[in-house]
Image (cartoon, rainbow over all chains, first blue to last red; front, side, top):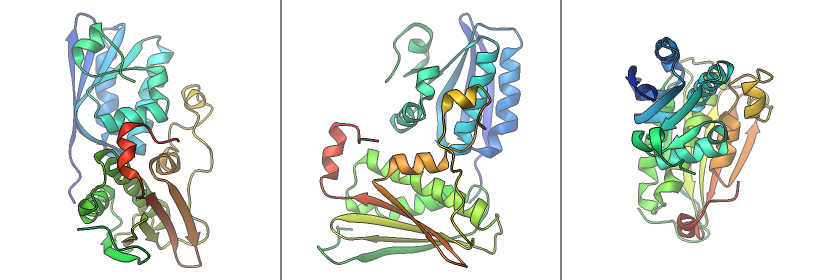
Length: 118
Length: 159
């Protein structure tokens, strides 16, 4: 099976930088994800939002990559949030306790202005 | 596909997956296709897929060291009461899982590696897990209890 490509693009919004993620978050995603996060940090935004709407698979290595981003965000006192996760991955963010350390929202609007998903 | 009659274990599939990075997705989709007729709730199916993917990835990485010629073998069987997925690699000794319970706070502080979520995810996604092995193989068996599974849609399974 061909390994699906992973892509990440940075968008600037008034309330922070948005990382639009697409594809599979596994070990192959590390370089692209780290580079995109570094790009998002460049203008020193107060918050970075991870948009998972285009992500259809996250494995345990992908969870580790997200933990790494969260550690970077905390070290620089930046808010890191997530939105657009499927119900299954919201559950995984809950059981790994990622959702205790980062906001998990259903969509971009609520991530910027609204209510956390639990 | 209907659930097997009570008391009899039926083999639903025997699969072989080459040990190549990314093939855990192939394994999980093939297992999902195999059990598609059992009427599992969507949430249970997603949990099973994650457990199969993680166990297969562990088998390919630590058991078979990503040697393509060393396949991961997957046997799916069911009785009326339970679904079993056995995932076997060619490793020796005990199956290699990170024995450390992941602690996110410790990971964020650098006291634990960010990795090490595989076994935790597997255990969280299925009802039971058995690990067996001999001089030539490791087998991880994932078990879902099928009785009363439809009720799970109304609430979270105890973790």
